[in-house]
Image (cartoon, rainbow, N blue to C red; front, top):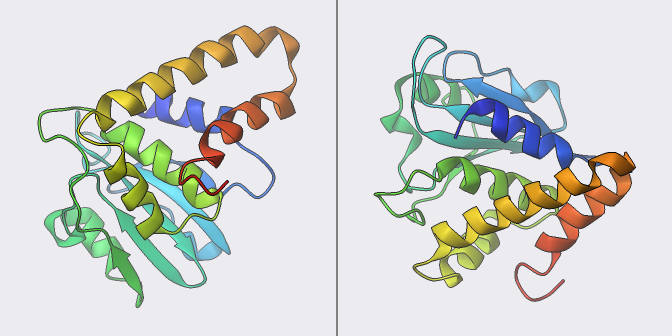
Length: 178
């Protein structure tokens, strides 16, 4: 998945209070501490590289969350490790939720970013994704495709609030408590 597709999709879902600040290469990550709440999706490649892996960094309450759909530690990524070490309080997931042979890491980052903006905690998101079962990669791809088709059809309405509502309503029942 290309960075522009990730950015374009998340911009369609933006709302007041959205934490999303953009998509960046590993050597161009902005200082998230300049915001009270911020999330970025980062490619493991540097700005001149191609075809890396997508990760999410989420910052709130002076704490940085590092999300990798393969459950790897940030120390495994050269530029990202140097960046993350600047934060005294870092939480990282250790659960592999993406199939090792799939290429949907960008979709996991989108999903994680949207759910964090809905105030789901990392452990709730990981549990919810795990509960989707072995077909979760396909499930996320199907959701992404459906959303894009709906947004394309709504393009003529220019009703940004309706687009946002559709996007967030689809995720609100993620853990069955919404």
